Length: 337
Image 1 (cartoon, helix red, strand yellow):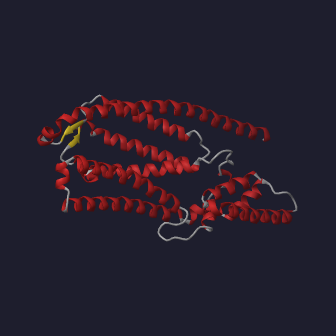
Image 2 (cartoon, rainbow, N blue to C red):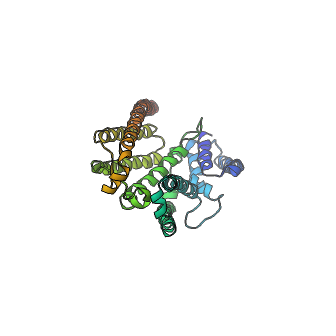
Image 3 (cartoon, rainbow, N blue to C red):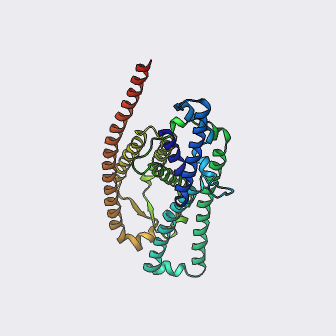
């Protein structure tokens, strides 16, 4: 019953924890009843092909799980948990940094506090909520498109039970893959909007500091790298049996980040005054700020190098196992032929 266990595991991934065991038990009893009826009809034990046909008739795992979830409209029950999770990531990654920077300037900079009381304060919060609504709106549109795509009947019906992942002996990695995919989506949309909304995202820095122009080319390098990683993550979701794909993508991402950091470190200073007035007022703070940026980049680059080595070893081991699996399958086929 390995194929049935794999099917139940795939269905259970999409179910809410409180009702998960009860639903799976009910579903397992129903499928076993169908298998017993089929076995009595054929008057012989079921083979693997018979089990596949029964499971395929039951439906794709996430569609079966969706029947037990509350029905929603724009974002259906299949994608809604991932949608809510991505919104939480966007809120944490955007709201907290903005509020910390804004609060710091309001507390420690008297001139900034004077300019941003009254109508200035109202302008800050209007800008804040406009950007928040834009970010959440983009995420909602993306998931609405995904909801429309996954509801395509050809996608739901044309699937192979044999391609279900093996029964996990430890916590499933599918949740980790979804988290990485969601993080990549938020990062890419935020990165694309960064040049147009940088001053609005962190208004306290507007007219005070700016990045050195030497960093401009790295914007496209980082974007292309993240797009390549996003493509790898999508492929890994559709090909879970390729266990080597995730460490290969992580190795590529960390190696690219390490090279980018090395190039950035070679172009000091990293932070410049926005104008002459900012230089006169905050010039004394530029050196310590640039030193902090240097040591932060150096530590980040070291971490990327270590991670790259770790994922290179994982990729080598996983790829060897994958090759052995292919050779073993080929040997078995030749033996039976």
